[in-house]
Length: 53
Image (tube, rainbow, N blue to C red; front, top):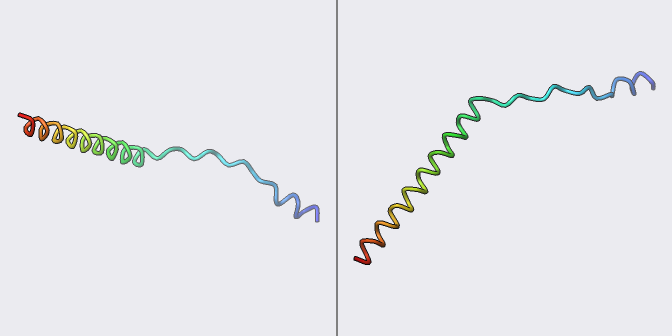
């Protein structure tokens, strides 16, 4: 009984380090999304500017 209880003690694990490749992929996706949204905004402004003039 005491051996089972001693075996079940949780050993604190070392915190996992962040993956540099994963961070680079997320940053790339974020930059591409920002560029896409900026392009859509620019296209909408250009279209409405053409429509008004």
